[in-house]
Structures are given as C-alpha cells and as structure tokens.
Image 1 (cartoon, rainbow, N blue to C red):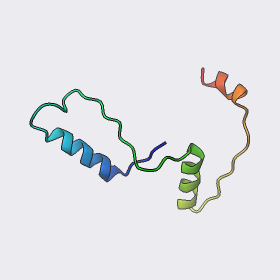
Image 2: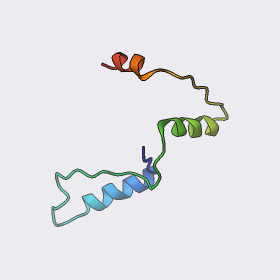
Image 3: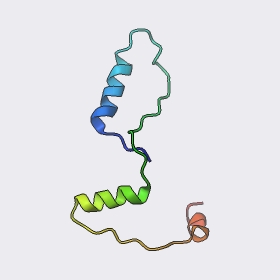
Image 4: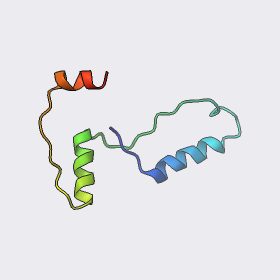
Length: 69
C-alpha cells in the first residue's frame, strides 16, 4: 500500500481539472504516497493513533482464499 494524504490527492484532482488542454480528460492516474507499507503496518498505525494495541493471529492463506472466492 502507498497511503496518500487527502490534501495531496485533492491537489492532484484540482490540477487535472484545471488543465485547459484536455489531455487529462478520460485518463487514469495512479496516486500514492512516497512510502510503501504493509496492511499490517497500516492497522498498527491506526491502532496506535486510537490508543489501542493491535492483536493479530496467524491465518493460513489456504483457508482464507476460499472465503473470498
């Protein structure tokens, strides 16, 4: 994951919307922050922000995959 601050993402939208050449119309842009983090790290940061401790347990991928089709 590459989380991006909402202000930075909004700035991207504004720049694309203000383009007078039309080159941004109908385009797809990948937007991401500078740091790559794991889902687990994002959850740890969220838990820390809320004053909680993240509790995890191992869950085999072979069991998880059929649950998500």
